[in-house]
Image 1 (cartoon, helix red, strand yellow):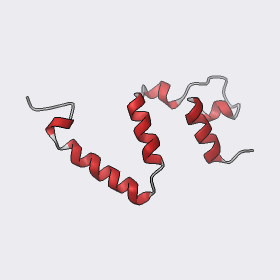
Image 2: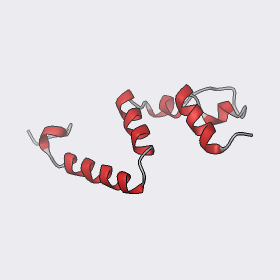
Image 3: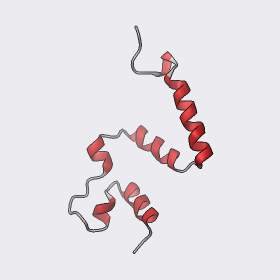
Length: 78
């Protein structure tokens, strides 16, 4: 049986669930289907996943900084 990380990566690439690849379900739905993940959000998660712990902390800090800047948020006081 393949390692878990290989199954997870294959499921991401094929946009199906790991359970589907393992034959545990007949429904190929992925996490994206149930969460309605936008392509940009999926890309961000995949990029984040490839970072080491230090890179992940830096990415979170950058996102927190952007979230306080009015020009980059969806909700504004205007």
